[in-house]
Image 1: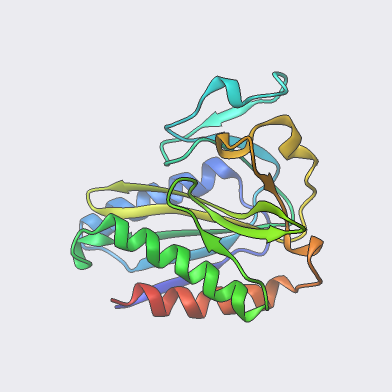
Image 2 (image 1 turned 30 degrees about the vertical axis):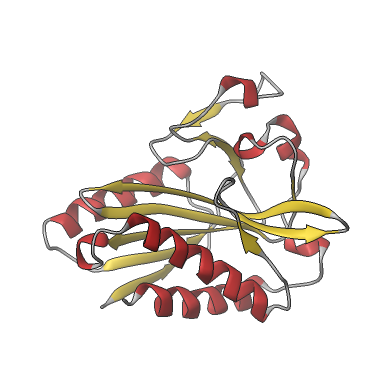
Length: 206
């Protein structure tokens, strides 16, 4: 299967990215164009998914953009790698669970190549690491399926500041923390993108 790989150098406005994804979904549904994997960064923004709970907001001064993705509330911003995709599940037996597992495995396998042990959790979606006896989220996943085309994607914390997470209960999970790769070691974003691209292409060509 042919998947277009796109990488944006400058930060992309969140609303603009959503419009591009929605248009890509419509095009794929109409048999136009290729599937997509898109690496980018956003400027600082809080977004909520369809399972959002007002109780997960600690700082009531923040502005929240409501979206149609899965999940609850999260933050995106500089230093955090975003990977969006538009993948046609009509060609993949219309199995959402299998698709999510393949996304999770792509992240886990990529982190393993960086000598980082991580895991998924059926109850708390995302990718987690155990650091100094604490379980912390390193990657958040939010997926929407429309006309059996999966889109939105995941974020991976690389060298972003963690202060913004203190204004919310990320993904509505109170008893676990959030971390970033630069708290573990020094990692280059370009290398991470190359590893993720390789593993995503391999896992999504099924």
